[in-house]
Length: 219
Image (cartoon, rainbow, N blue to C red; front, side, top):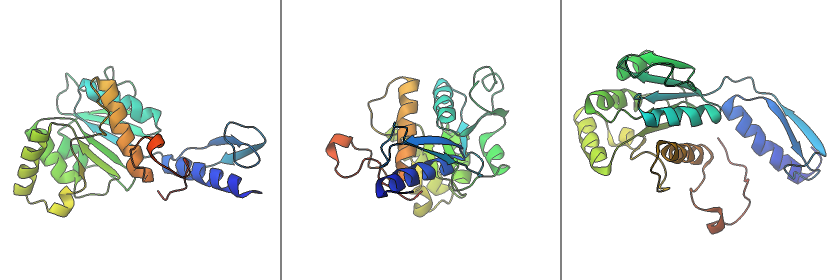
C-alpha cells in the first residue's frame, strides 16, 4: 500500500474484520498511524459473522450476550427453562432458544470460529452439553464454575468417555483472572480470554511486554 507500516496496520485490521465477517472503512496515516486520515482503506468481508452460543439463561449470560454482540458475534442463548429463556431478558441475542442445551447443540452447526459459553452450572445440563461440544469444531469452549466444580465436571466427562486431548480444549474456570465480581465484569473476563486465544495474545499487561502492540498474528 506504499509503506511497510501501512501494510502491517491494514493487514492486522483486515484479519480482524475477516474473522468477524465485518465490512467497513479504516483510516490511517501515511505510515500506518491509526486515528489519522491521510489514507482510507475499505475492507470488505464476504464471510458471515461468527456465532456465539451461550447456554444457561442467567444474569451472567445476559452480560456475555451483550459483549458478544458488541464484538460482532451472532449470539444465540439457549436454556431448557422457558420462564428464563425469553427474548425480553436477552435483547442482544439474535435468537433465544428453549431446548435442552445438548440437544440444541447436536442439531446446530459449528465451525472453527464458533464460541461456546457454558454457564448452566448444573451437571444435568453441562455434562451432556460439554460431551457434545468438545467433540465438534469450535474456536473456544468455556464453562463457568469454581475449581471444585471444574474438577467434579472433569471426572464426569472422563466417565462419559472423553479423552484428555478433548478435555484440554475446555477453558474452565472460564475467563481471565481480572478479579471480576459482577456479571458485566465476568463478561469482560470471558471476552478477554476469547480475544487472547483468537489472536495469540499473552493476557499480560502491555506494560509487561515488549515489541509491537498491534503485531500481525495468524487467526
